[in-house]
Structure formats: structure tokens, C-alpha cells
Image (cartoon, rainbow, N blue to C red):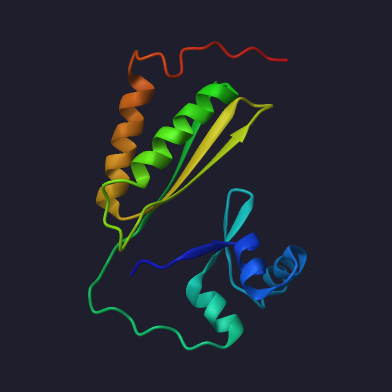
Length: 150
């Protein structure tokens, strides 16, 4: 079953709390969360449990969800921005809108490293990973700029 995942900031906004308060709830065990990289993600059911809302009835249809983290080294900020735009655009078009892909990109300026976090349906995730592989292995100029250390 696919379930919505929220960032600490989104949970804080929904509950009208400060971000530090939400993080405190996570550290104390009052709110369950999953750590992906340096960030927490909170499942909708865990948020419902915190607020006392009844969880939704489970769906009779079994669904699988894949989580993938792609790390790309040796990219500059401009290439990371272009790649992020491509991945986000692809994730937001042509897929099942009932079960959308969730994608987040992070760029580390000091290490010239980009991470792409993908959560979603196995087939849609595989399609996005194939696109990413094609772009990274193509001679199309998207990532051709040399990275110079400052």
C-alpha cells in the first residue's frame, strides 16, 4: 500500500508546531519517522496516530513501493539543476496520478555530489531510473562541464 510521506517541515505546518518540536517528538519516540539521508520522513499513518485520527481502512489491492537513492559524483551546480529539473518533470508527467512518484533532489556544493531520492511504484521508478541512466551515460552535453574545486 502506498502511503504519503511528509517532511518535518510539512508536519510542523500541518500541526501548527515549530520544526524543533516535531524533531523533539521524533527523538523521544512520540512520533515515528524514517531517516533518509539527513532528513526525516513521517508516514501519514504515523502522523494520524500522533493526532489520534483513525487510520484509513487498508486497501484490498496489494501494492509495492520502491525507495531508491541515486548518488552522482562530480557534477557542478548547473548540471545538478538541469538533471533535477529533468527528473522532477519526468516524475510528474505520464504516471498514475493516484500513486505518484515522489522525488527529492539534494546537491552538496562542497563535494560536487547530487543525490536523488525516489519513492514510488516499482515500474514507474524503474522507468525513471532508466531515463536517468540514459542521460548519465549519453554524450549529450548535460553533464559535460568540468568541476573545479574552489
